[in-house]
Length: 374
Ligand SMILES: NC(=O)c1ccc[n+]([C@@H]2O[C@H](COP(=O)([O-])OP(=O)(O)OC[C@H]3O[C@@H](n4cnc5c(N)ncnc54)[C@H](O)[C@@H]3O)[C@@H](O)[C@H]2O)c1
Image (cartoon, rainbow, N blue to C red; front, side, top):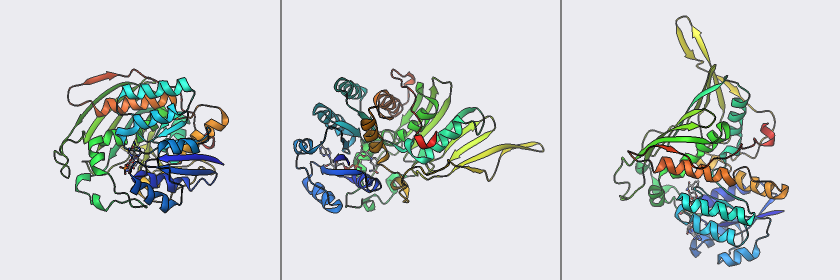
C-alpha cells in the first residue's frame, strides 16, 4: 500500500479524494488545512485522519509517499518548500509557483534533495491526451503543421458561482480564482498536451487583458483573457486562447497535411478524438463533416464518468509520481518539464499589451507516453 497526504481541504481536494478512490492501491493517510472547520468537514466526509499541523502530517508520512499540495496558488511556494525541506516528495496543484524565482527555488531544492516535485494538471496522462498524442506520433493526419487550442470557459462572472459547492461543502473560491487569473489556472490543461506532443516552447508571443472590470465586486483581478502564439523548438506553431469571457469552447484542433484531429473537451479524460480527413469535392475543399473516431486499443485508466472538471481523474499525477518513486525513475511531469510549464504559463498570463516576443529560458526533455499508449 502506497500513501499520500493532502494539504488543503478546499474545493479541489474533493475532486482528488473522489479520484483517489478509483485507485484502491493508494492509501490516503490524512489531510491538513489551516482552516480547522474546513479540515474537519472534509475529513469527516471522506472518513480520513485529520492532521492538526504540518508537523503532525510529516510525522505520519512514509518517505516513499507523496504530499499533495492543494492549497491556493499564492500558498504553493511556501507549502511546497516546507514539504521538500522536511524531505518529502511533492505533487503540487497548479501553478507550481506564481513567480519564476519561486519556481526555480523549488526546482533547485528538489534536485538538491533528490526528491520528486511535479505540478498539475495531469490530464496529459489521461486517455484523451494520450490518444491524441498517439495519433500525432503515428501520423494519422499526416505531418502536423498548426494547432488551435481554446480554453474559453464562458462568461464566468455571470455564472451561479455561489451554487458551485464541492462534495464535502467547500464553496468554489471565485474571488481567489479571479485574482489568480484564468490563464494561470487553466493554460496548463492544453500547454501540457502541446509540450507532450511537440516538445518545449522556444518563443511565446502573447497578449493578455482584463476586459470585465468588475467581477462580482472583484476589481483587482488578473487578466481574464489571453491569446498566445507558441513557437516550439521542434518547429511547431500553436495558438492557445484562455478566457472567462468568450463562449465556452474547449476544443483542440491539430491541423495536419491530410486533415484535422479534433478534441472537443479538454477536461474529459474520456473525450472522443475525431479525425476529419480533408476532401476535395468538385471545386471545394472541406474537412469531413462527420469524421472518424480514433481510439487506443485496450484499457487505459479509471474514468470518473462525471461532467466538467470532475470528469478528470485528478489522481493520475500523484499515482504517476508514486510509480516513479517505486521504480526509481523521474516522474513524467516533474523536474525541468514542471519548470518549463510554469515559465510558459507565466509568460502568457503576464504578457499584457506590449511585452511582445518572449524567449523561454527553460526547456525540457521528452515526456514519455504512458505504457498503455505506446
Ligand atoms: N476549484 C477548482 O475547480 C480547481 C480545479 C483544479 C485545480 N484547482 C487548483 O487547486 C488549488 C486549490 O484550489 P481550490 O479551489 O481547492 O481552493 P480553495 O480555496 O477551495 O481551497 C484551498 C484550501 O487550502 C487551504 N490553505 C491555504 N493555504 C494553506 C496553508 N498554508 N496550509 C494549509 N492549508 C492552506 C485553505 O484554507 C483552503 O481550505 C489551486 O491551485 C487551484 O488552481 C482548482
